[in-house]
Length: 179
Image (tube, rainbow, N blue to C red):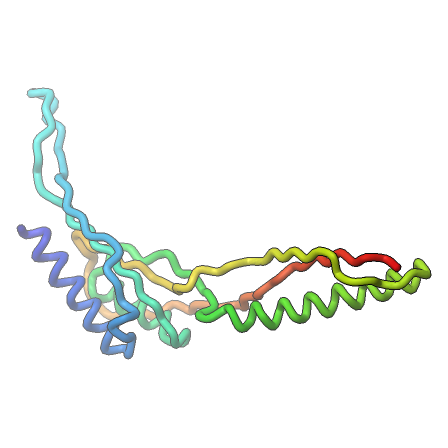
């Protein structure tokens, strides 16, 4: 009961603080909640006795404003999260970018084929086959905050979170009939 109360207090504070930082309700999701016993081995009896319980709760947060990531991580630690991990930067709606990448890939493939056909002294007929491959990205950029016993309070510095860049790639293969 005490471990659950401690976890509930910390997680509720963290979730409230995250929402106060303008993260929408739909972008905060409980990913895990578990309670399991802690054992201590009694060497004189040769038994393990339950000495308490551990409560663990994880949340997934989708942060749309990347400037807020460091602040959110800092706030979670400040409010007692004892694990923060799993940051992923993804593209929220990659379909239109994949369509654009596919168009460019097809244009490039046709241009290369035209150059090759001119060099060979042949001409291109119709396209007889097409295949595509590329990278699919998960939708969520996430951080996890797992609770149990918590850490000390106090203000903490916001870490610098470098976003880098993401590429959407589409590889195409066109097979032409030769005239």
